[in-house]
Length: 382
Image (cartoon, rainbow, N blue to C red):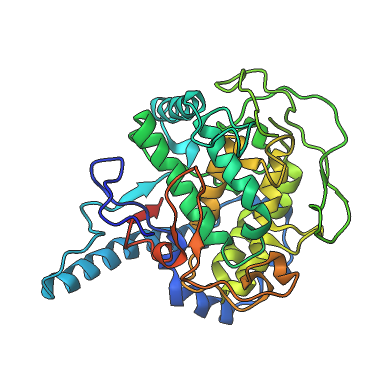
C-alpha cells in the first residue's frame, strides 16, 4: 500500500524531482521540429561533450521545476490544502563526481554499513542472502523477468532506488541522497571516473546470455579496459554473496553518450519510443543505455541481469535512468505489458498494479510513484 504519513530520512523532507519531467511540451515541440539526432552526421568525440543546447535545456528545467512546485503550492493554499511537495522540502540529487570527498565517503560508508547489517530475507527464501544489502539483490533476482521490458520497469526501479536510499538513511544514518551516474561524462574512460577503482586483467569481453525461456542468442560485446579485479578503493574486500567489474568505454560511448542518447531520450515524443531508445530491443546489439551501462560494468554481479544490484554501481546507474524518465503514462507498445516484451501475450500494466519489494522494503502501487512531486516524492536532479 502507499506509504502515507511516513517520515523520510532527512530533515523530514519528501524527495526528488526529475529533470526531464519539466521539459514537457517544449521537448515534444522540439522533437517535431528537428530530425532524429542519430540521423545527423557526427564526430564520435562530439557525442561525449555536453552541448550548449542540452546545457540550456537542463538549466531551464531547474528554473521551471522550482516554479512548478511554487505554483502548485500556491494553488493548494488557495484551496486551504497543504502541499506535500514545497519549495521548503524540494531536494536535489547530484551527480556522483560533483560530491565532495566527504560526501562520497559518507555515501560509501552507508553502503558498507548496509552490507554489514543482517538480512531480513529468511534463509528459507534465499540462503545466499547474508546482509541487508543482499535483500535488494534477492528482490531483483526474484522479479527480473517481470520487471524488465515490461510496463512496470521504470516505476518499479524508481521505487526500488527510493527504498534503497531510505535504508541507507534510516538504518545507516546517511544524511544525503542517492547520487546518479552521468553516463556521458565519463564515457571515454569510465575506469578513470571517481566512481571506480580497478586493476586490468586481459579478457575477451562480456557475452549477453538470454535468460531461460526468453528467446534470442548470445551477443559478444567488446572487452573493457578497466578491471575484473577490484584491487583498491572502499569495496576492495567486498564479498559477492549473490552471483566486480569489467569497465570499458566502448559500450558507454556507443549506448550512453550526450548526443545520440541523452538528447534523443529527452526529445522522444512518447513513452513507447522512449523505451526503445532507453532499452533497445532484447538481444539485439543496440541495447540502449540501460543495458549498455550494465555491460559497461560487466562482470559478476554488475553485468548479470539478475544479480546486478549486488554491484554498488547499480544504484548510481539507475539514478540516471530515473533522471531520464519524464512520462506520466505507461505506453501501449510491446514494453507496456506485464510480460517481457509481451511474450507470451499479456495484459497491459495498470497504474493500480503493485510494486512488490519483497523483504527489501515497503511495497506500493505504480500510481503512487508516477508523480515525482506528490506522495513520497519531492525531488529534482541537478
